[in-house]
Image (cartoon, rainbow, N blue to C red; front, side, top):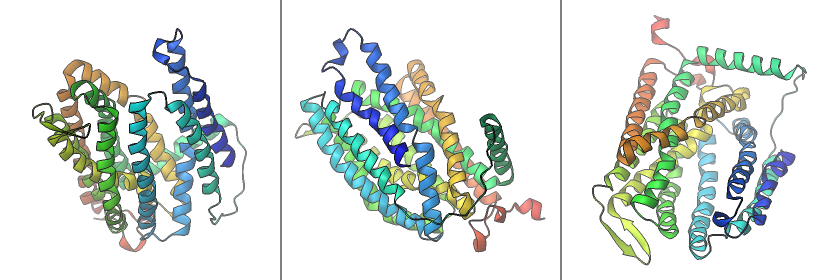
Length: 364
């Protein structure tokens, strides 16, 4: 874990060598690729770190409490993010090259955070390691994933709903960034204000949703999450047709966009929990990291297509059309989640056991 943190965070230090004005550099294309490569390496850590976190949680906390404790950790994360976003937005307005000094500092913090994660004690079961060729290992893993998805129908539906949601989210997130710039003409400070608005609301709501997730079927919980993103996209789209705003100390406050951020606050609070630990509700304790790894695999799969597809839709039908497509996808994800909840039930006595999921039709 510690070496993983070093190898994936250290490349951020290279940003200090970027020229002050990349846009006017003769080799501007080269810096684009270096920038993308640095963050590609950075995110290589996620397929190991996130499943490990889930394994630690499932090993150390009871089924009812681990979502509550995770909500507290997420609150701390969002408080730091809120403060940093506010000041970083101001610094970027003063000097757009400040990232050259900020990201190397973040590299050191990132290494330290992974070291802290590695210090968490957890119970390990002694298992015999069998070394097999890489390709054979991949085939075995894929076959195991296929079997789990076939047997564990609630988890399968959970991931199918997430797939539609993922295309809606990833397909619109880049378009929203363009929308803020081209259509709404927001500066860095204004964007930081909106980000802090929904993150502040998320901080207030996280304890409530942390307790709720521990008591509620994650598929019902996901319907709340997907609906909040749906209304977020709806009010963002409405800003085009109701472009009323006021200036508050250099910050451009759109009325409908502020309403959108309220729904985004609910989305940020619920998705922080659902995406990170939702998968562990469908499995046994020893399967927690494996199920989260499957969840990450599906996230990676849709990330190959969704952002480019979203930008392609935007180029064809514009901002409003893109937001409508996202809303339709979210309606489908809500339908799949609620339909699955009604069709497949959980045995309350052993809710974390994947074999406890039952199909009423099969029982009959």
